[in-house]
Amino acid sequence: MSTEGVEDPVGYYLEDMSFHGRSERTRDAYERVLREFEAFLETRGSEPADADHRACLAYVHRLRERDVADSTVATYASYLHRFYAYMAQIGALEENPMTLVMEELEESVERNPTRREIPLSAMRAFLDDIAHPLDHAVVVTLLKTGVRAGELCNLDLRDLSLPDTGPERAQLAERGDALYVDSEPAVGEETNGEVRTASNKRKRETVIPVDDELAAALRRWLAVRPDPRSDADPLFVSTREWGKRLTPDALGRIVRDHAEDAGWHRSGAGAAENVTPHYFRHYFTTHLRDQTGERGVVKYIRGDVADDIIDTYTHNWGNRVREVYEANIYSLSGRSAPNS
Image 1 (cartoon, rainbow, N blue to C red):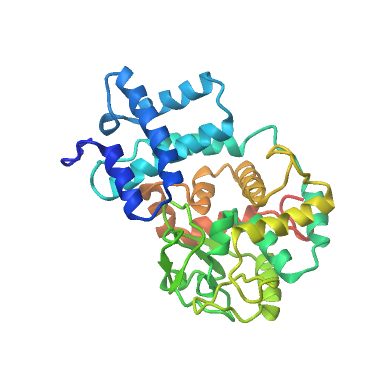
Image 2 (cartoon, rainbow, N blue to C red):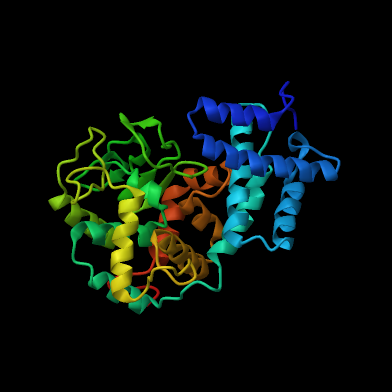
């Protein structure tokens, strides 16, 4: 790797974090992790600019040897990933050695055997009990697409292509019923004329098929959706704070309320027991990957894959991604279900 004249990549990154308006608390957290990683590399005769994926993996292994909690390991790894991704993007470093590490970490988390297991029949009954059009639409969207909470909240109407809604985006032209999930929205930055309060975490933008069930749930919601306050025309807006873009916190409350009613959430319990918005990403990933064996397609839909792989599916979208998806995605109504 080349530092392109940057003598202290960590210091450079921390200074840029300050320029981007990140809080002192956030910068301090990143500095603790990045300097610890730097000290670890020094014991191996290396430095951040020279680290490859094996050095990064060794650091993660060292954390686990110290019995650091899995959630903390994931947090530290995400800090390293963002550091390398940013430095590579601005050309200060040549590549991001954390990419492979993060893919393996995320897959291990998604296959976490301690998570609550919910049969598809129980998930269908859970949805049947959700009468509110907004609540029903967001849960169906989470289950059918595997998007993150922030990604769902950042969707604008222009990101949805149905016969009666568009498409407005060129990326959705001739894609049929689909959702476009951008990689650009970030906290504090303007997208489509609105400063966002949540970030998307995709490596690349993604077009996700919309099947008949999701289309029906979205049409039902759009028929009663309050007029949005924002000119960006958010797809999901609050019915409590009338017309305001839905936030991850508000989405979390929606899911928690219904999960508590189902006995799937209790105060003080952790990810192994509680159903949260992220649980549905895990549910979607596990079911679709196990059903299809198509790791590439699942990674594409999740937005986890690198440029060379994602380009393969982008260019072959119609007869690969949609066909695999529609042949294998579970039915949430129980009718005509490929995985009943």
